[in-house]
Image (cartoon, rainbow, N blue to C red; front, side, top):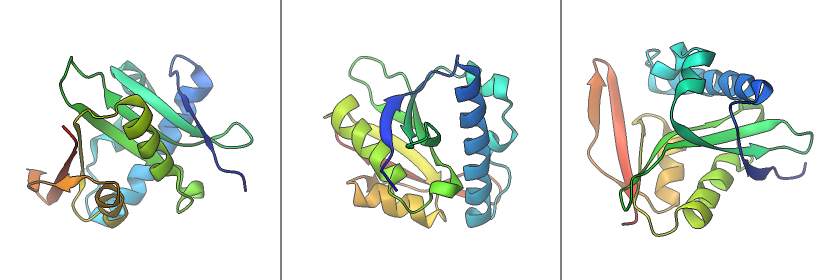
Length: 157
């Protein structure tokens, strides 16, 4: 199967927004199982809430035009760190390098040399492994809610 290509996503487009919402919910449901915590905020996010977020969106698009995964980040201030908000892959595309493709593209082409921050569930082994493999340094773990342990990562800067 051909590799997906990377392109910006525009959530003003209804079909794109619906696909991103569906993929995000499916990916976060898998993470909830991995980390043993079903209170991930994105699982309860409505389509309107998702579209209302002030985020930049990058997608990995498959050969049929389907979104295989996406990366979203807060618009950084001048010289400040880029904070990744979410990196989600459609479960149908798991283990095909989609997350690596998106993250490498962002790090090398969109914000080279900029500090980048991200958090994930500490028990989300696939995500922890990805961030470590791509040169992120693990910082302190923290618990924003009872029963939830998060891992923080930084790269560059």
